[in-house]
Image 1 (cartoon, rainbow, N blue to C red):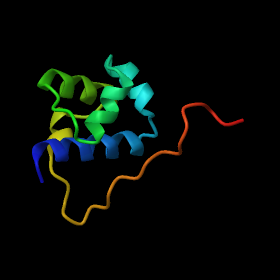
Image 2: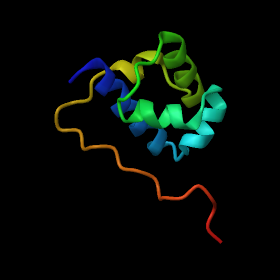
Image 3: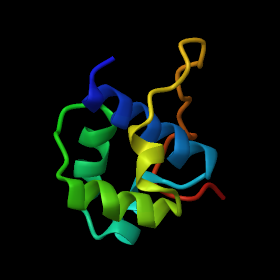
Length: 87
């Protein structure tokens, strides 16, 4: 697995496990939501400063975002769709 794929995988897994939306993560890390989306899809190559900002926003060690998952790890699931709270 490429480093960019490992980062994307871990970013999405941790964000979803914490129940945080891309929008809230982007706000906490002072990034654009669409950039967070592109990072999770492996379409962007983040700088180390960006990785550090995301790690801080998620309250995890920087290395957690860069550690390859075990081969048997299931693909991270998504949160329920939509940007607005359901009534």
